[in-house]
Image 1: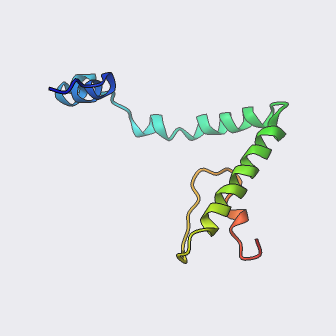
Image 2: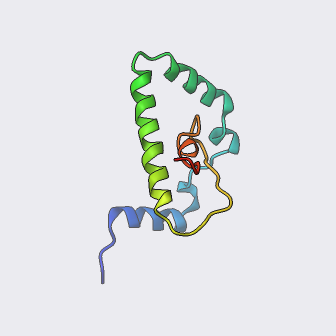
Image 3: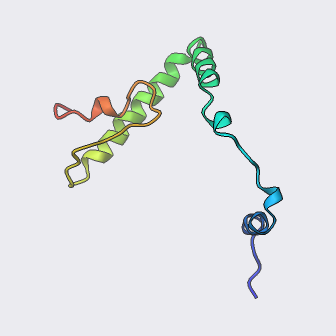
Length: 94
């Protein structure tokens, strides 16, 4: 018999014993006030420009990978990207 890894055992035990599953309310996940506070806090940090550079670089590289795909996409959605770091690189002029 194959021995289960601790992670696999944990998943199976939560399936068998529902009391170990955490209950989360949708309000806990989508707390707009908390996200606003996080954005305001990060914008006030001294190294904000460094993180912006990393996000811009990631957006450029991700868009470059999308352009490698041969299929033509008529629609796209960019979720949770702040200022649209990927979208700004997905124009035909790029």
